[in-house]
Length: 166
Image 1: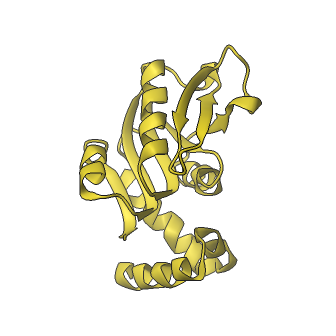
Image 2: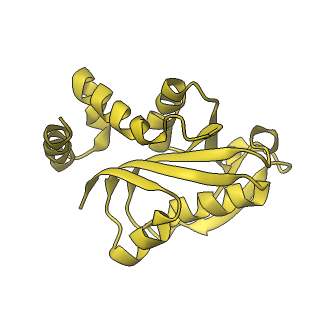
């Protein structure tokens, strides 16, 4: 099943976007199951995902794991009291992301979900953001890993799971 899923994913990505996965209910369900499977019964307490594309998958995976979901949002959607970080994304644009201060506790063990890890920039910054709260990243689940070997090695210590690789 997983090899067939990988083939289907590659075909969809060639068409242009991982968003199109949701238009095929069977494929979308398989993707969610495979993104969730490695993290069942692993002591994770919350699922987080960065705005925008991560929000497409994170809440569904949280639901499947019967865990709370926390969105990592752009600065404009948060108050000054919330936990924020500034960084440059893959396109070299300056961005600020954050989470509501009350949403993550020091004892939380976090699963980070996103659609694609292209350069790893957003993933690294979300890890720093979670570090500011005292919580720990226990896993990362993505559909598509486009990272170079050095960047992929950085994420391995966080139990980095992906469905297909560039």
